[in-house]
Amino acid sequence: MSRMDWFDAQDFEFARQVLQRGIAVIFFIAFLSTANQFRVLLGEHGLLPVPRLLEGKRRLRGPTLFRWRYSDRLLIAVCVTGMLLAASVILGLPQVGPPWLPMIVFLGLWLLYMSVVNVGQTFYGFGWEMLLLEAGFTVAFLGSNQVPPPRTILLLIAWLVFRLEFGAGLIKLRGDTAWRDLTALYYHHETQPMPGPLSRQAHLLPKWAHRAEVVGNHFAQLVVPFLLFAPQPVGSAAAAVIVLTQLWLVVTGNFAWLNWITIVLAFAAISDPVAHAVLPLIPLGRASAQSPIWWLAIVLVVSLLLVVLSYWPIRNFFSRRQLMNASFNRWQLVNAYGAFGSVTRRRIEIVVEGTRDDDPGDDTAWSEYEFKGKPGDLRRIPRQWAPYHLRLDWLMWFLPLGSVHEGWFYAFLARLLEADPPTLRMLRRDPFHGDRPRLVRVLSYRYRFTTRAEKRATGQRWIRDQRRELMPPMALRAPE
Image (cartoon, rainbow, N blue to C red):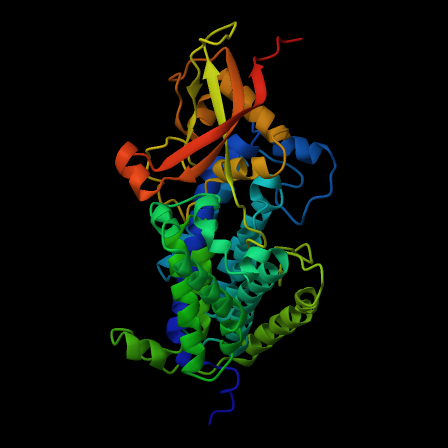
């Protein structure tokens, strides 16, 4: 036995390749999403402008390159740089160099994306943002092809998957009786933030199948994560269960990159012999030179740091007020995760309409704005968007759960009244084809999936009723 066997994981080369390239793909998509949407949502003339945030001297969530200056040009430069760095890893270029080269590239991705997240305000307040940051930092220390994957880093990635899954399982049991009485999936496929093309079919499954889904979810999140640390092939089998359950979520919903990044991270527990036995095309791990002492020292210092930071999420597991998607430090490392601690029973959709009439009455023709991802048109099949993240559509789902009187939403309505071209490009359909409406108003509807009989009779995939007017017709204020 080599003196470095405790550190060098020679049988996890395939896992490293999947982890490095998979996380790089997610970073590429995250920067692409940012380049396409950030300026409209948060740019110099955005709904929540970053310059206004910086001028307000408010304490930022953490370090950012934009602390001293923000411009839309600088934002695009950050995104392009991030996409180029991510593409280099996808192509395997840094991996052929010394072990510090992939480390520098991933730390660059981490710092660039953290700069975006820490000024992203509510549009970047999702748990998968900090998950990507933590994953990017940890994967940075997997080294290059010149050295074997470090065992401590693989264990810490498995620990990240454990916190992600086990935390989500605990928050469900603590947060909602529907998860305890096995009825949560009676509602979830219909009321989730952004349904996918197969969500309606999943919703129409018999109730016994939905109860079985919940039991399977509890097993996958509360039992299987412990087995990630078991000897092979048990660890690989546990990872396979997590991958399969996440693929079911991919098929039945649109959760940005949450499911895909979980799938990628689960490969940290899959060994080369097991992967080769399942897919013989996957080569067995090749023997690499032992890790040099300087690299061992760097990895062990980082591993010790992440172990120390694990105190806070461990304490959170045992807290009666368990936090969901919480960071305990400004660098967003070793966070607490969780999702759907409560299940929405009814789907309420916010609908925005406009008219060209100056004085609306009972016979006024109102036209509806269509969003790309969230339900609107009752006949339209929902699209599969994940892992791409439609941030405006997600925030629209959250509005009925709180209040429509959000600053960004008022700014959005003003952009519609101005017929602002960049804002209109964020939508699927502008009923006024670039012209200005005179008035807009905000309604809410209850949406539900049609039954099979209703679908045959109407051709619709949704039924909507219980209409309410949340905001009366409003126009742009005259300039002072």
